[in-house]
Length: 158
Image (tube, rainbow, N blue to C red; front, side, top):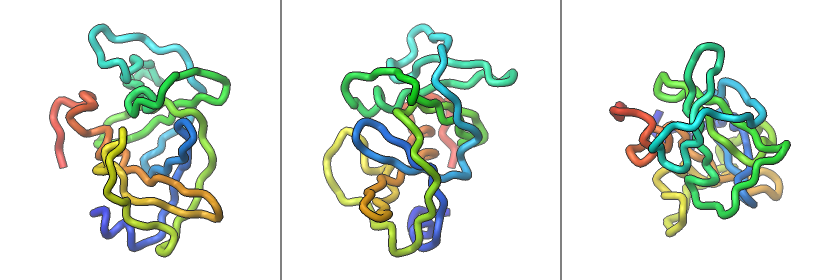
């Protein structure tokens, strides 16, 4: 579905925090949520790729979004989690500060992302959702993880 079509309907998002911001991703991409555990480091991998884990016989790359987005000092604590995602028929884990909850965003609760310069390229932002007093940055996690600068996939396919 195109981003414009997705803006039109209601959607369920898993929300999580990175620094002081709250983000949301399509709940249908989430396979499971795990506590952060040690990873096997890969030589010459970019700094934001923490390494890999063995998840029931599948080797899963682990990406720390805090490092990728340049969010300052990265600390691992009991709230740090890995969200295991199924994107582009691959399993990938993302490290986040914590998971908030699952929310449903209706048509009127999501606005298009504004054009601005930030550490997060706006091409990966689908929009901004508002629920009560919360502002949620809705990410196109598949587009982000499949981008060339992530170096996770050899070939990017649409």
